[in-house]
Length: 172
Image 1: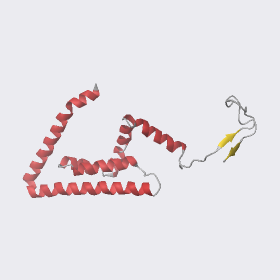
Image 2: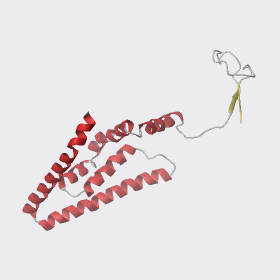
Image 3: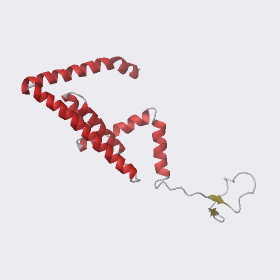
Image 4: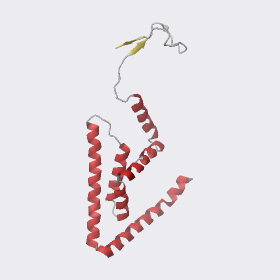
């Protein structure tokens, strides 16, 4: 029910947001002039592009150097802030600039992972986290464990305690 209510009012919210942005632009143009407003809007677009490029290059360098990029959620918040800077309007610019402030970004970085965990990619995110826990260095050693006292045919006896007898050998 909650999802359908949001879907019903989303067009109204988008229209209200556009009207507020337009009102801010007209009022600001009355104060400082249309040319200055246009220059500020273009400057916000350029700044947003630079922020997105910088965050993307930082993540790319981390990935190509063989290590996982730290703070994927922080990168997502930075890129979202850059996109908001590129959207025409001053309200979106203020929100985009707030996304670049470290304390605000730290508070907001919980949101992308929470959305991913609940969304359609939730299973993939959980599997990725499990893989990091079980294989932190990413190295896999191929081998086979052979117990001398295990039955030759059939399955392994799970009721047997491994610490009572010989420890087994690893063959490579």
